Amino acid sequence: MRERYTDWKIFFIFYLPLAFITTYIHIRFTSEFGYECEVFGKPNGHSAIIEGQAFAPTQYRILMPFCAEFIHQVLNISIASSYHSLRVITTFLVLSLFHIYLTRWFDTPKALIGTLYLAGSIPLSYLYWPYPQDMFNLMMFIIGFIAIREHKDNWLYLILILGGLNYETIVFLILFYFFYHSGQMKFKKLILRTISYLAIWTLVMVLIRLKYGLLPNFMDNQVHLIGYPMYQTNLKMYANIFKNISLTNGCFYIFLLFGFFWILAFLHLSKKPKFLVKTAWVIPIYLVFHFFIASFGETRVFLPLFLLLIPLGLFSIFKVW
Image 1: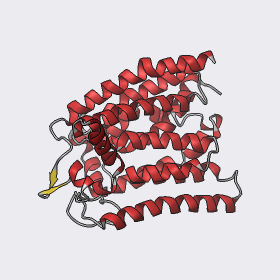
Image 2 (image 1 turned 180 degrees about the vertical axis):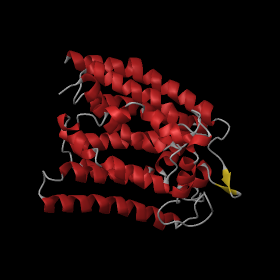
Image 3 (image 1 turned 180 degrees about the horizontal axis):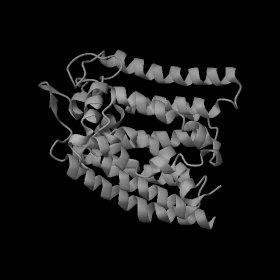
């Protein structure tokens, strides 16, 4: 009971101020761009999303814009302030939930260390663009991992609905679920459960596209059914990796984000919890998938991997086995 009380104090003494600090950093990174913008001479910011006139995939990620619009209307504050409020709230919840997630295996000081590493790394995921979906997406992944680990299978339906309205890659929760339960759940039951999750996520994707239509992508003004192909850009970036040896080179962002945890996570795997080991098999699939449809210079897309690399690395550091 005493440790639980200590954890709650940590949430407000450490994580709430850090939510404000990282949000301030985010504002400084993105202030010149704002939440209203144009692409190809067409509106692609907040107002365009609310009115259903934005490009893909921006138009399909509607949850945060509509939450911001609700706050704007109810509290009569600016759109920017609405988004900043949402980022403070979601960042605070991400840090608090991540701490709770880690305490399943570690005591409070170790969970604090892991969470502070996450907090210190979050600003590296900030780019020139606001991307309001990222923290909520990470929060949905944390809740989803807790649900999978604690066998709260029915939670995943709501998580996939809310997560799908925010960001498409929440679908990877289904893969994490499948890998964790493979070999310990009856195969037929696992397949049926996996199909039901995939059906829910697909339904959300289809309904959004039925409402707004198949829209041109903001990258090239062309319609792409499965995201914009980024593999050529990524190949070119890594082919020229030694032409610009600098911390600002996007090639190094993914290594800077996790640092030595890339190595620590995979040491002595056989001694680490089954949940972490089995779900870690998804990491190569996650990386390959994003190599083809996302920029490897945008570290924000790798934030969900903190859920595996940090606890796996902490086990190696403290040898908690």
